[in-house]
Amino acid sequence: MYWLSKKRYIVGMLIPTLLVYSVFIILPIIIAVGYSFTKYSGIGKAKFNGFANYQRLFSDPTFWIAFKNTMIIFIVAFLLLLVGAFFIALLLNNHLKFNDFNKALIFSPAIIAPIIVGIIWVYILDPEIGIVNALLDAAGLSAWKQQWIGGDTLSPYSTAIIYFWQQLGYLVTIYIAGLKMIPEDVMEAVRIDGASAWQKLRYITVPLMKTTISTVAVLLITGIFKIFEIVQQTTGGGPNHMSETLVTYSYSTTFTKGEYGYGMSLATITFVVSLIITGVYMMLTREKGEKA
Amino acid sequence: MISKKKKTAMHVGTILITLMIVFPFIWMILLSFKTNSEIMTAPLALPSSLNFENYKNAFKVLNYVQLYGNTFFVCIISIVIELTITFLSSFVLARMEFSGRIKSLLYGFLILGLSISPFILLFPVYKINVFFKLSGKLGLIFPYVATSISFNTLLLVGYLKTLPAEIDEAAVMDGCSVWQLMLKVILPMTKPVIATVVIFNVLYIWNEYPFASVMLRDAADYTLSMGASFFKGTYTVDYGGIIASSIMIIIPELIFYGLFQKNIVEGMTAGAVKG
Image 1 (cartoon, each protein chain N blue to C red):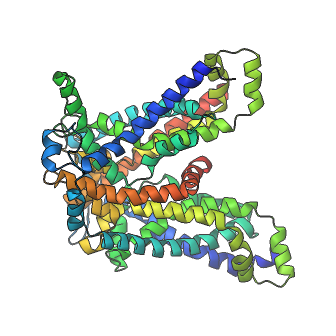
Image 2 (cartoon, chains in turn yellow, red; image 1 turned 180 degrees about the horizontal axis):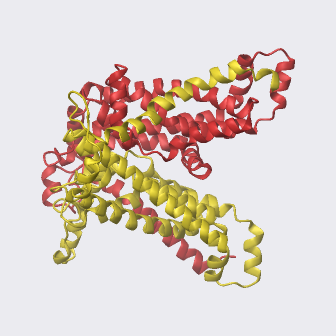
Image 3 (cartoon, rainbow over the protein chains, first blue to last red; image 1 turned 120 degrees about the vertical axis):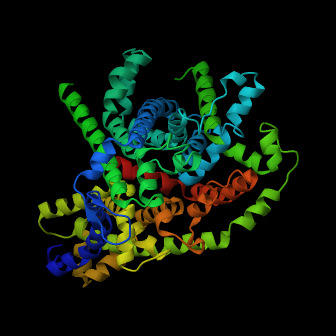
């Protein structure tokens, strides 16, 4: 509508959103990066110290533990969910009885507070009161009992499993939306041609689902780098920072220890690492797409 | 046709997966009726009786009226503000005429937020709140409004673009002003997306923890997720109480999900698929 599109309307109606967005999303990123080059204890003024925080970070053993744990969670959760959710979506994409009900139940962990997801899993994985070790005891397999959480090795793997539980239904739903977009007649033709289930999957379903698979992958990358409450609630990053992730370490450095400058350099690095992984993933899939 | 054998296998598979996902919830409910000593000494045993002691304790530890009240308060104010401002800006981006390049640049800029992790924002936003003298519950409003802008823009612009331009023309012929067109003609037609936006944001604020944990110092300001986190470190004391308290936060949430399942799933997947 040309005659409604007066400049003062356009500008006036855009300004509130742009203002809030700039002040509370864009400006904070700039501030965070700014603080990452300072020493700041919260009192007085932040003191510029160049790249000192970033140098410290590379020689900080806890940073590398957090980095390693984050990568373990990333690899385990990424593979489990990317592949697992796909096959479960194939299983659920049909007109069986009660299917909608099942789908609704599988989706439900994704809507409850992540902090409560953490609480729930304490009662499953805790070495003392958790059901997993209790079951192993009851089955006479006490030797298999582990410190699923709170020990010094398994916490990140457990975090990945908990994340799997939380996100499965959500990603299955996205996959199913993608499967529904494959035209019925394509599948019909494949069936008539007598393709095996594997051939159908390999040559038809997966290639046609490429966009959806990419969407899920990007969601996983950004999602996994936001895991916080689960770790906070199950181990709190402990014992002795052994189960810290990049996000929890940057959080505790900033808000528990009050080392704001160093905390912001950790936050910045975390942000950059997740951007790099997203970027690399996009580049890899684009190349593949061109070859195909 | 799917063979009968295959159908049975699929049924069994589906049921197994569903059980695997639902089991932790069932386990929680069972545990909530056990006493602390039962939880510790006989983890696998079923509750010896239907014992509501844990629920009584939960009410003593957490002030639910206040938790729900605070969450509700933050929800209403944030959602009113964000809907007002994002409806206006989305209307401009979807329906007004000006340079297409600027338009897509602005749209891209506003959508960018979908890939920004809140963790880099926490401390700077805290400082900005201090600067504006926003503290406690009030400190949550602008971060929540701001983090919803990308999602709301995505959904609202997408939907507003589908409404035919003739609507605007006809309305103007009939002597509508811009405001009348927006509020009386377009807004009512946008109801379904607005419902999705509102429900999605209610859920977001209900569950949001990182910002809440940074902004809320005083227990009187706590929102629900903060209430739940109250037990961190204290769980060696009262296992049963924690479970009962958590259940009383999840149950309303699951009911909410049951009622608005369609909008919730739509909102969560639309953000992903279109973004």
